[in-house]
Image (cartoon, rainbow, N blue to C red):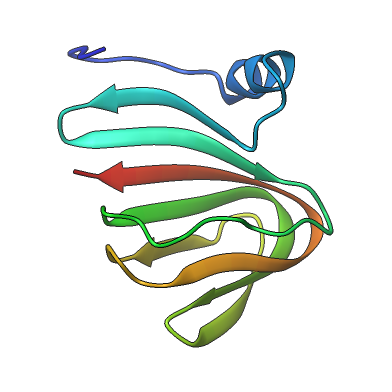
Length: 107
């Protein structure tokens, strides 16, 4: 997919994610310079991610938990926006309420 523009409904993306097996990651846009997806971590779960090859931005849409990157730990909730450079150790943890996160990977 390499559109000149696109529009997405995150409720529809999440519905399809659940219908297709409930994976925690659902990519819905992939173009040469950018990948975007929905990342969903249930309350009490463990974030299995490892450092990525790309810079990334997280936008927490709903839920509450904590985030650690490069030894810095902070609370996250709706409206939190996080940037993580490529190859930096990071993860969500202490997930108190289901986290729904919009993720942007730069290529």
